Length: 248
Image (cartoon, rainbow, N blue to C red; front, side, top):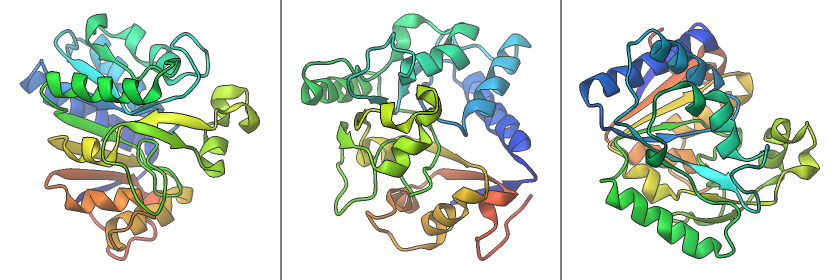
C-alpha cells in the first residue's frame, strides 16, 4: 500500500480531491466508485470547489456508489442518494444518465444486486474507487463476518455501523435501517485504482489492522492488501497506531 499521512483532515480532503481531479483531467470518461459517510464530506466540498474553478469536468464521468439502505427510496432524506445530491451531484456538471445507485426501494433485493453488477460490467468496470473505512474495519457495507460476499449483496448492519449513520436520521440510531445493499469485496477489489481515506483517532485501530494486521474477514479492509494499486490517505490521528510513521 502507498500510505500518505497529512497533518489534518482538511489537507487530506483537499489532496484526495486533487488526485481525483487529476485522474479526470487525464481521462474524462472515467468510471468512478464513490463513498458516503462523514469522512468524504470534505473531499466532496473540495471537488465542488475545483469544479467551480473550472479545473475539472464531470460531463464524461460515470459514477457507481458503494451502497444504499434497504427500504429507502432515492427521494428519502436519509438515503445515500440524497446525501450525494446534497453534497455533490447538484453542484457539478455530471450527466444524470451516468449516475448509478443501488435502489433501496426494490421489491427484489437479490435481483437489484445482480442488475447493479451487470451495470458495472457494462460500463467497463470501475477505474477509480474512493473508499472510507468503518471503525470496525468495514468498507462499503461489507461488515466483519465469518465470510465475505464477493459481489453486490444484501447485508445486515452491525449496531456500531447503524450508530455511525445516525446523523442521517436526525441523530436517532433506532431509525437507521437494519439492512443495506452493498458492493461486494470482489467488486471493490476489481477497481483499477483504489484510494482510501481515514481521519480521526477512532479510526486508528482499524487502520492499523488494515495495513499491518493479518488478512481476515473480521477486518474486511485488510483484503486491500491484495490489490496492486491502493493509496491510503490518513490524517495524523488515524495513523497514530501504525508501527512505521510514513511521509507527511
